Image (cartoon, rainbow, N blue to C red; front, side, top):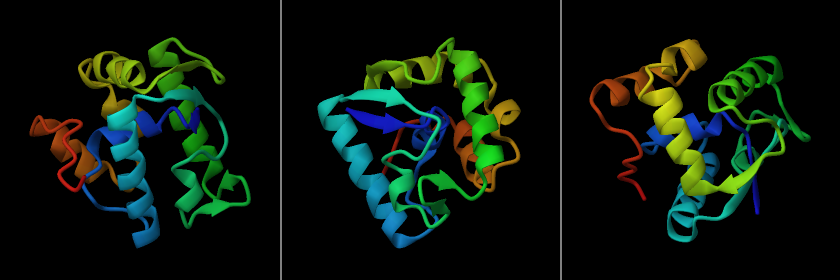
Length: 135
């Protein structure tokens, strides 16, 4: 089972090879490849997860921008009707994110102030969701 921050359901939907560092990008590719092949169980967490592990903004166990990412997580959980600690399969989580947030037009409302939103918003507008060419 993998721990995953709820807002990472959005990040993974639009990942296209950009990241905070080469180490982070490699880890994201590896996890997305693994998740796509094995559909693992994930547990939604409010702390550092398997993607944060390789992030240069990960301080020992928490994000240096904790307040912002906590707000993203809280909004995602509210839209999905889930709570921290929920356990579900990766594919089921992606379907919830895709239908209750992305198809509902809630991306900008949740994370419009994110530094990566220009990329995600453009990919969303172009209809490119969960197409990860670098995998």
